[in-house]
Length: 248
Image (cartoon, rainbow, N blue to C red; front, top):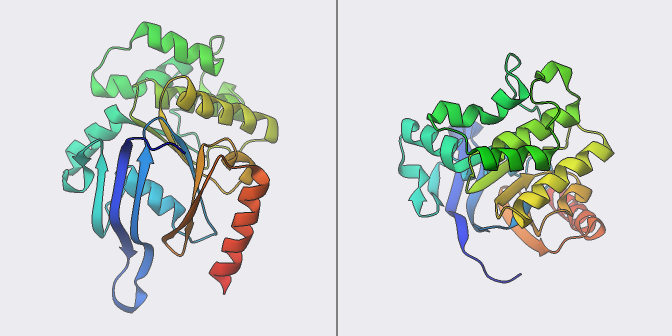
């Protein structure tokens, strides 16, 4: 893959939970860059550190040691208030459980990050996001009136509405059927291709990973390699080898 500017850089990042004999190292000296405008999938066996990787990269959790920077801003040096402001304005999030506000309409859920930041929506950009996610006829509905796939599309639209530098997605298709999962993955693919977003997705599914530009593999809290232009079969083969390694 052609070298590109890294929008997120992790330098010697370690994360340890607990102390003494009960301490568990979730990440061990991880150094990696996440390029601007590139869709990266993060994979690994159970317990490999995937979720911790995403949480540290996104400033949702603080590393025990090491440094995380977002376009030159050192997240590890920011206080909680500054981190919250940064996540609200410069990052977007998509989770398996959707995390929509039940009392708000689709339109209100999509624009919630802007409202919290005290920013008026860019109407042209909002219209483009709504059109791309196919939610034009659902803007007045509430989450309970939507299918799982529609809820996840609302979550994707909400993640994109603030024009974030990075969109982080944690198992975004885990609760969806195959057809709906493909629709959501296509939206994330378009976010990278058409909108120039950096997308970082944690997944266990080789088919989902094949939508990415590259796959970053983790094992035992360490980077265990990358795969550019991944196919589902090649991802599955690499995961099989990693699984054998982690058990050995």
